[in-house]
Length: 174
Image (tube, rainbow, N blue to C red; front, side):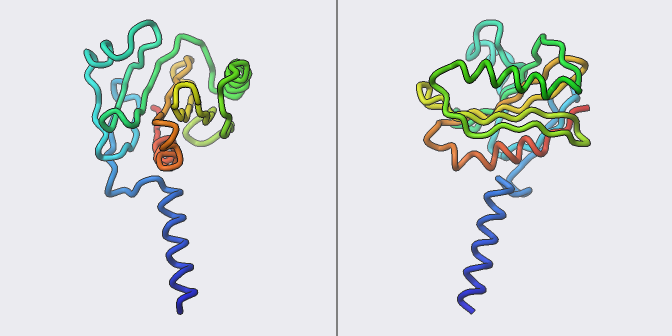
């Protein structure tokens, strides 16, 4: 009996880790003029355009930012690079080669996935000097690169990794 209980508890914990967050603790939102649907943790709030402009100066300003009070962020950037759906894998390889030239990156994971929801590049890294964990996921939208990221403090990355995975898995680009 104890063995079964332990097995059930292990399976429950594994399920919680793999799903990142439960359906009850999420909210579905639409971003970029109804072009993207995504489920994010219920505690995430959308930053106003004014706050985004204050927080992110320069030409690499995200189009959308959601946060849970500055511990974790989900960002969307509409990039100027022309990338077709078939070129997403090549872009991921190029982006990885550029990132690997930076000496201060701890590489965690990378992948290229073809799915019914498009072709996606995925990269997970830790920037030790910035003390940030960043989960990049990108695709093509209207023939241009759509770059999204989920990031948090590096010390908390294991706690947040499942949330980043769940956000990525929930994204629908129209």
